[in-house]
Length: 477
Image (cartoon, rainbow, N blue to C red):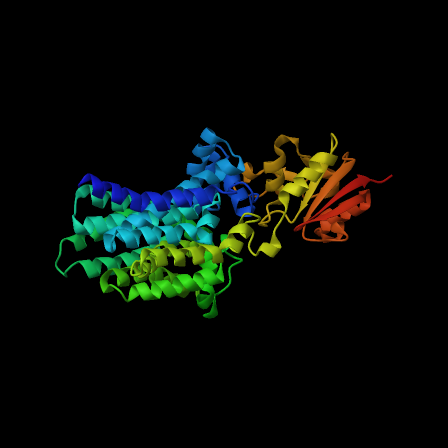
């Protein structure tokens, strides 16, 4: 490859990757960890043996990511920025791979524009700034497709091995993302004749990757009803809202969809293959969700790079000045969403919980010997106790009703004392942290806790915070 060509090829993938990293790193620590990230921190911060026992009971589908994060924390710590930094790097790689794939399927301009488009999507920043696996899923989805295109063009053992590894990593990060293989099937069919030996190569690599992921898939299927019991059956109308939901902004999603539709009609073979990589996962997950809880929009975020590639092909047909102007308009439309995601990661944002404010209030007012009580607790996802543990560490009040710890239970929750009055004996002051806004926070508790606190304590002061009510109770008599 001539030097000038190598430089141009490097620019195609490096510029989107650097732009994605820069945008993702902006305000990386502004939004506090939300409940899903707290769960990731809880799992990853355990000894490896405890972590493996936990994923045997819950969150097996995130087990590979938790294991990676465990070793990352050992090297770089568990600050908000440290926890999220791997996602920034993974999403930057996804942008670079998107541009490289566009250059292979179309040309350098289409690849560069697709990568830049992906970089400015609000959802790219959203998942680049989250300590969860979704950025890695996007990265491995595009990498697997890039390696498949390369292997089909010039088959080598190394390229097929790389594709196998990328598909396996994709499944280990999110089992739902393996629906991308339906899009890969279309890509292979468009690229090969019926008797081509590369069909056999592709089938073998997919089978090997499937065997590598199978143990995780079996565990995950057994845990699905417990983890996704809050997910409803999607209605057809949710498909219409999907572009906006995926991109985190309705105007951005609509504009991306329009550009992708134009790009689909420009070059049939790559256009159909890329459309399949977008539509096949959506259709398969939507259909499966009619029978089992599965429709979680963020599980499909890995389809966005392929939509961006179709849109990049459309933009490449314009003069570069006009194409960049369209990109600028799309970026401006996403500014409100970009700002909002740096305030909170909760969804809907109206349900945001200010864990840090509650932790700060407790830290400022606690005394030696104080206890703390949480509601809701076991089996609930607000993760109030995990938030206090993360923010206050060993300086938090004693969890007076904790009977069995998370590590002993091998899950994300604490087992509570069956006789609250006995566990509260000798505790003069109790902090009460309750989800939601309550004029009488004690009344919001389950019977046993409510009766024990009513009988022995009075509310000295109560404060409502975003998503929470924090009260201090002192013993009567």
